Length: 224
Image (cartoon, rainbow, N blue to C red):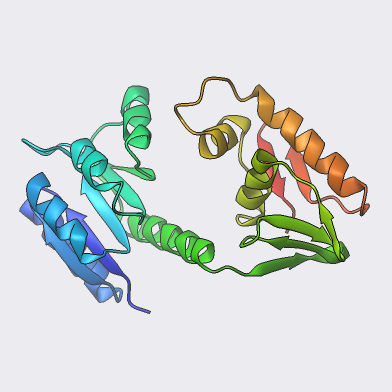
């Protein structure tokens, strides 16, 4: 499958550099040199958007806010600086990641590929089977042990989904809270530990196997 990328930057050299790199790596490329053109090009159904933040007139944050309701693909911001408020603002308008300029093409390519793989996994409604006869049905949003459904609350399943779809990757409590509850939620990450305790207890009623592992001083991961 050939993925289609929309590359948006007001610097011609960067657009050409990224276009050449991703074309050589098998991607179909759409480009835009300003925010207004980016909004129009977003209607061509890109699989991922690389979006410069610091453009004149209509900047990357405004573009993202304008198109996010109609575009579900990952949006990765390209920016020369990242401060905490920049991150908050970017994620609030619907961005998925930040890439700091200057960047290495290999790292950028790996980040793009990772987001596309994650998006592909989300789009496939299939069961993921694990040892101990535990089944996570992402389409039905249910976890089963044998034929019995393990009654998880919505946020509990959201955590299981996040961790299990990224098995082996460690997430700290703050990142889990941001991804599951959202950046605009009023609360704090302390609720994550309680939700994970409940998930573990519910799974433990059906199997002795450990699926969510604590990485002390770092966070949590789903055991591969």
